[in-house]
Image (tube, rainbow, N blue to C red):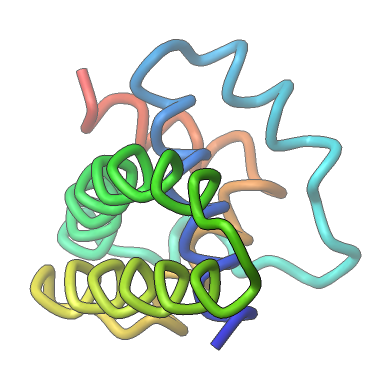
Length: 126
């Protein structure tokens, strides 16, 4: 489960960066780029990208809500409980936008590697 929430959180952070500014999003995403081949931007429809944007915004809100709770947890068991609750809510938010976590993560990875895709998503956010 830790991998799932980490990937979802990285997606939400990227989306938050897209909302706050193009240059910042590209700079923050570039160092995190994995050495995996990204699908070309043309492979994602506007509908898929809009789903990603909507899911990312919801996941960012959940992350903001749960970060203080996670930091306030006194022991590993408490942190695990908060972590799992946040994970479930984030995954649910992604699913409610009509996406799987794998689809969400795939777009997130592609955004980290494809500046043209970042531009398309930025236009949707504006």
